[in-house]
Image 1 (cartoon, rainbow, N blue to C red):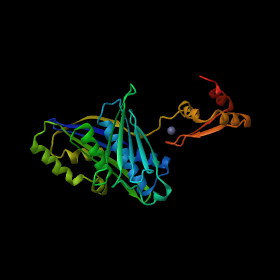
Image 2 (cartoon, helix red, strand yellow):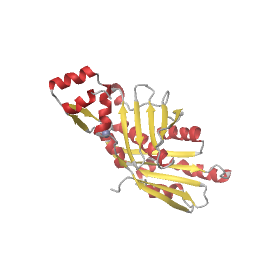
Image 3 (tube, rainbow, N blue to C red):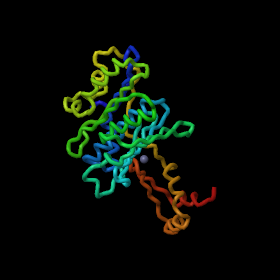
Length: 285
Ligand SMILES: [Zn+2]
């Protein structure tokens, strides 16, 4: 199977920009780490794909974090897309709701934060539109926050609990676009509002998504890059979370002389800290 990747293209008349992504392996990796399956894995895959598309539509050094909050405020999913193409995520769903999937159609919220290298954060929140889909929530965000007419479709093809394919596209229309062209494109994309028919006929690769969305329009691929599931955790980063342990707790562990074991919530990598390393944390900075 081809590796996950993203293609960026422009129509030669400069009217449209298209970003198309295949995220199958990314979604599989993140879902496995989060032990998400079925409808939850599918929604998670859509959220991860949307985060990738939004990130790819912005400056290359931006990190994009997306939080989807369900009708039940305790139900949350997080997608975290990094410069360089790695993406990770979190699924936090109350056990009682897990079987029915994550409902977002009534009080659902989509929150998107862009973090710049200088540390500043730009944040926006939208409520999930009536359509109640993750694609519609991302479109609503782009409309209100970025003020660019944007069409987004994200999707996941499942076979029971297995992710068969995941991906999506984003089409942006330049502001000065003629009304007539805009209508043509809107009409054209009506057939691809859902990724399902594209998955069904095995036509959801980035190349095919470009060919479908820009059908009959001369266009040029302006960039391509690889995507993957990946985490940014490290022994030092996880150790920072030890700062939340009380000194009494750390002392108790030291007295027992045992290793401390911490697991990264995103990727499930386990890190072990020796008593000596713990002792270091007890030193005042
Ligand atoms: Zn990690």
